[in-house]
Image (cartoon, rainbow, N blue to C red; front, top):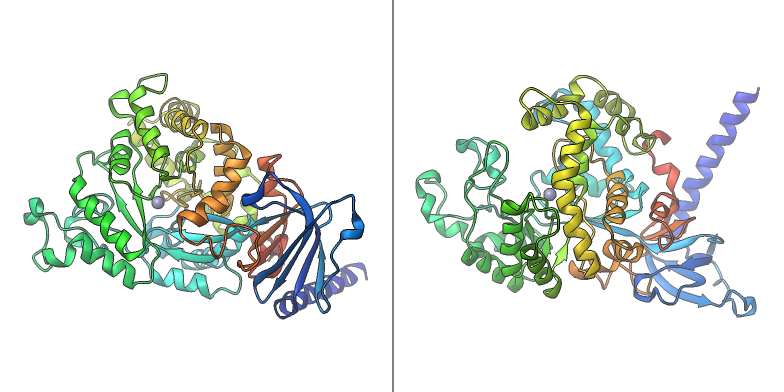
Length: 507
Ligand SMILES: [Zn+2]
């Protein structure tokens, strides 16, 4: 008898939930007695109520906790949601994701595991929401179908993109594909007259100028332009890179089209190039210091470039999870984290744990040491080299109050160490350890991102007129970074969704 009763109650409450979610969209919602934390007024945090209607924030009423008599009345016809003892923040923004890349898999493995990949893609938008991410920017659209399907899921974050990216001909990342097939997937590559003999004749120089490429990005409906400065790593260390005059043309065309210019740059040389070119956002931390790699203290030469980045107000994404996402293969604790069950469907998680699923770790290990090295040794190598560099550069930028904009690069490689949603939470933990204050992290993921992306009239704060993308949590993000894992409800265009219902394990 008991199991039956339990089942019955469960199905009833699920039906009840679905019902509230549906009606809340048409009826106004009154989120009441909640501590409102909005980045434009962190010096004035008060309890209050927020009225949400037709997907927008209509009213924000703050009141003094002591004077209960001043409490505003709930508008007639509204549905109340008590936020008592909780904190309300704007939905989080991750401005660096790659939705069509499947964590942990090669292209062949994706094809061989179709059902597993399909289940992953269906869960992906929910996993981002599970960790409070209500807005994403995909930096390189290689497969528009994945983005369209994402937007068609019943529950999903708002999604913006940079369209097809602008690599220099034969440069990173088109260099990963063989010469004869690398041009088609990158229709916005920039023609390089010096390499005319290595560009198929069907591609005309006039179609591949910065201006023509940016015009196509704009026409695709994108909000940003993504380009690269990368000489390469491992086996490809001498890739062609663009000169300052090409970047200047991309800069001008982006500005003229109202697009945000984002650049892949993770070395001292690349970030100096980016700063000199006055880009809008540098989408990686500085883990390669070139000739200065062995320096123990942050060299003055690097400080000068970082100062320039601060002075120009360039948006900066340390993306520390790029490194930790690779280190995950050498960290025995990673795959045992209970959080993985929340963001990854069971079959895929089982595959990550299988010998097949560990292929990328083996490749990394061999790339680092031909004979293979013990896990602990590899972790130590990462920590003493790239992680140390990015941490020192990031700490310096934090001390200068740089314009951090939150972005994770999920997934940055075919690694299972970068899972949707969870990766953002881990990145915040990394940033905290690197020296960002809780306030800097909070602003980076809300108002700084919104402003840099020119979306601040719609998102980024809790103010009337903005989209009602909101997150309710039991801990304050200004007291602990763990708050971002204390979410209870995510409001998606005003629709309140209980966090646990978004978990992969809830099905
Ligand atoms: Zn990326």
